[in-house]
Picture 1 (tube, rainbow, N blue to C red):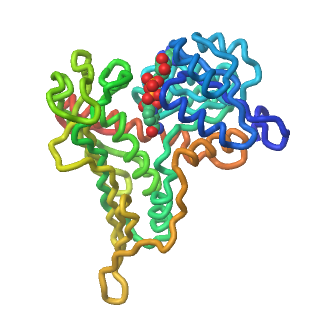
Picture 2 (cartoon, protein in one colour; picture 1 turned 180 degrees about the horizontal axis):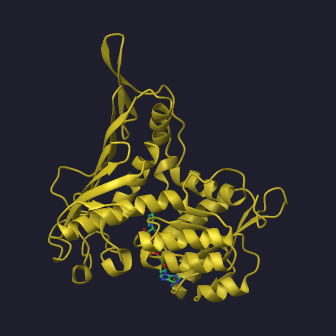
Amino acid sequence: MSESSSAGSGRPFRVAFIGSGLIAQHHMQLLKKLENVQIVAASDISEKTLAKVKEQFGVEKLYTDYHKMLKEVKEIDAVDVCTPNGQHATNCIAAFAAGHHVMVEKPMAMNAVEGRAMLEAAKKAGKQLVVGFQYRFDPKSKLIKDQIDSGAFGRIMYVRAQALRRRGIPNWGVFGRKDLQGGGPMIDIGVHILEMAHYIIGSPRPVTVSGNTWTYSGNQPCNVACQWPNWDHKTYTVEDLAAGLIRFDTGALLTIEASFVAHIEKDVWNLQIMGEKGGANWETSQVFMDQGGYMMNLTPGFLPQKDNFESKMKHFVEVCQGLRPNESSGEQGLMVQKMLDGIYASADAGSEVTVE
Ligand SMILES: NC(=O)c1ccc[n+]([C@@H]2O[C@H](COP(=O)([O-])OP(=O)(O)OC[C@H]3O[C@@H](n4cnc5c(N)ncnc54)[C@H](O)[C@@H]3O)[C@@H](O)[C@H]2O)c1
């Protein structure tokens, strides 16, 4: 158990935030529901956001400079990093240097170089780095992973992963800025399905990646009725659509498709897995196998209804308290980051790239 852990001591587990925007506020809401967890401080460059956090969650120690927060607030066990992607590495490294465990929102970083530096900082500090992936904690993901781990599907050959929005360019934040986010739908929402798929099939080592990206709509004024109109097309420098093909050292292939804009009937958020003896469809919780001479479509009679975000926050606290292994580690985050890097690098090169 870590020396800064509160488990067994009776005192609360103390979390401080770097970045207190939309997702941080969701984290705060969920942390408040957990027993014996306290939000001791929050930082954000926006005073308005800090005022909201004070009003809604009663956070008293508020900072517009997170370095000052890390220096002045002594009673911190873990730092929750919820800034735009371009800040993740710097924020995490500062939090490790201050001697804290860290959870960082997805994607881990802008690229694998930053991700590796974060891992090194965690190791040097002897602290946990938890990557804030939530889809691996979804009961549907556990259902499929348990089938695979039990050997019921045999060898996994092919995975089809899709995070497709027909028209869903965020009209808030900096999600259209490549310099601040590292990319568009692939790094922002593709990462969810990719981390889940990779985890479910046992985190194999990616070997090569081929991919492409296309920008054709986000950089134009919004001219269609949609849920999030009037995005900032003038600063839009990310892709609208991206696709990648990843080959693993197991011989398995994974295709990933991600879009903010795609001319398809409706949004798709799904994962299909094909093994030699069985397969699955994530969205419908279906398992496919041959049994007694029939091709069977199986669904579980009971699947626990757990909110994956709640599970992610509980996992973060318990990992930092030394109560359970890190099931969303920096090492796993780095492999996901390498696959994302590979898709963007392959798009730039116009050819397949090798993953280091
Ligand atoms: N897991 C999920 O489902 C999920 C969902 C949404 C966003 N996210 C991730 O969370 C992160 C933040 O996204 P968001 O939607 O909350 O964006 P947001 O714009 O609402 O919040 C980001 C906040 O960071 C603040 N900030 C920027 N630079 C800062 C700095 N140097 N110090 C302190 N604060 C700073 C901004 O003022 C803003 O309030 C992104 O990495 C995003 O990918 C994850």
